[in-house]
Length: 150
Image 1 (cartoon, rainbow, N blue to C red):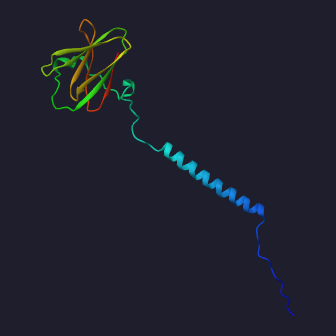
Image 2 (tube, rainbow, N blue to C red):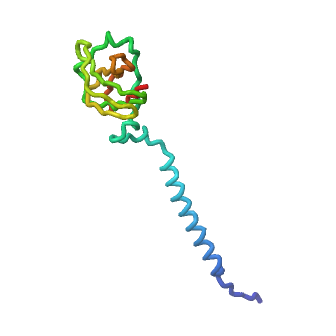
């Protein structure tokens, strides 16, 4: 005669179920952490520019002062701003180069100070000493730019 034995279904002990729950929670936390890390490290484009802080604006390249006599501001540029930063040890005069190449003084920037000037892309600006000697020439671009005078 064949004896039949009844087999109870295998029920994992209580500790095993708790371990499974902890592993699932850990996987969920690690997944969220990985997603946050990816978002933080993902390239997000250019660095943020603070409109109020000229020092965070993209730099404008200083042109050769020898070019001043041949430069003329154009009339077809979009409205923009130049932030001048005076890193010299003396006051500097900021002048616009007009359509005929003439200087028109707009401001004096003390040593270590900054100055924001509304302008148009394509306009040229000269930074000069009190005696009129040019220190730097900058051309405004479509986006606000930082003009460092050294």
